[in-house]
Amino acid sequence: MLTCLLLLAVLPAAAAETLTLEEARKALLAANPQAQAAAGDLETARLRVTAARAGLYPSLSASASYTRSGTQGYEPGDSYSYGFNGSQPLFSPSVPASVRSASAAHRAARAAYDRTASRLVYELKAAFADLLNAGESVKLSEETLKRRGENLELIRLKYEAGRENKAALLETEAALKTAQWQHERYRKNQRQLARRLNRLLGRPPQTPAPELRLPATPEPPEDFSVFEGRLREHYALRAARAAADSSRAALDTAGSAVLPEASANGSYRWSGTDWPEKRSGWSLGASLSLPLFAGGRLSANLNAARSSLSSSEAGLKNASDEVYLNAEDSFLAWREARAYLDVAKSSLDAAQARAWLVRKQYLAGQASYFEWRNVEEQFIAEQNQYLSAGRGLAVSHAAFAQAIGE
Image (tube, rainbow, N blue to C red; front, side, top):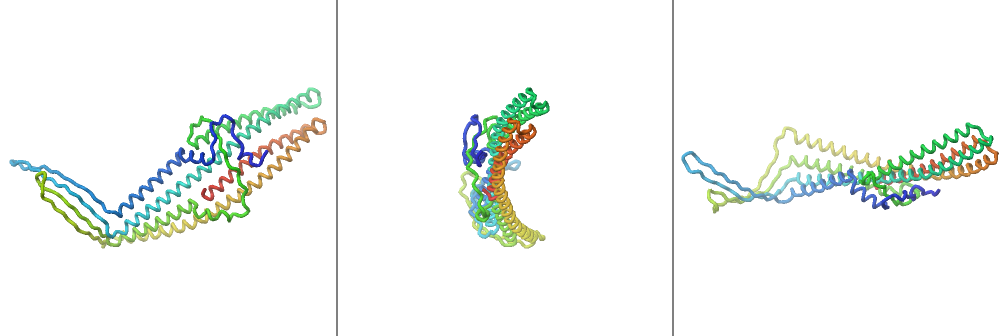
């Protein structure tokens, strides 16, 4: 068995197609409902930035009215008016603050989308590692079934020849039936994992699971410091920075509420009782407003915004520490999984050699049935343990990639 067994193995020939990891990632983000929801939130935030920026530009509107009225004993009369109105903010600090707040919300939505994408890609890698492990377990179970059947025939011959007891025969039969039950369990687990992978990719659950060409797990470096540069753009840090920027924009908004606001406006209108009417009027002007008394509302909002900013800055520092610690813990777990794979490989080789030797000794009458049985059980356990170690290495590397924001 090779070191990269779980990463380079393929599924049975029933699979409909083969995907690279990047192709599977694109299919996942395009079809998965969670990714679609996050993409919708991101688009909403982008449009809100556009809407906020519109407050910096002039606005123009058209209006029209028509009225028919009368008095008893007189003919009814008509009146109408129509025209255009325009305005332009001259001094309004709250508008730029709203733009900055919307931009911060957009960056937060981008970070949230990246968080969802990173989690889903991790789930994709983990699901496929589980599916590969299940496929190899089924193959190993088939080999175990074959070996258990051969062992039963051997014990039966010895029992019929009077060289083995009935307890050994019954125990070997039970071991074969147990192997058959485990084989069915492995097949059930493989099918369930295939449905899980299809669901993750947004495919019908009854379709064959696609094959996935995963790159071999790289060797972990000795020092975690080579990855520290990537952490600055981690989605958790970007979300925390966006929250701090949003709090600063809220503070600017609260502070601008005590400042005057000025705008220019103009209109041109036609009105009268006949159509068309030549009478028209126009107006140009500016307005200025300054709050004088608001019952403490403005100062309370300002203090609340300052408190919120202090809280978000503390949250940014906490997020920075958590990102670093989680990434380093995942790095150490990756190195541990890689080292354990070597241990599992060595143990498997030793168990295989021991099982071969004790089988020969048992056939030659130099070892007891119980010694041979125990060695067989240990060999099967080491085979499964090696498969689990390979799966653990693939999942630990996927968890590390998620921890550094990929």
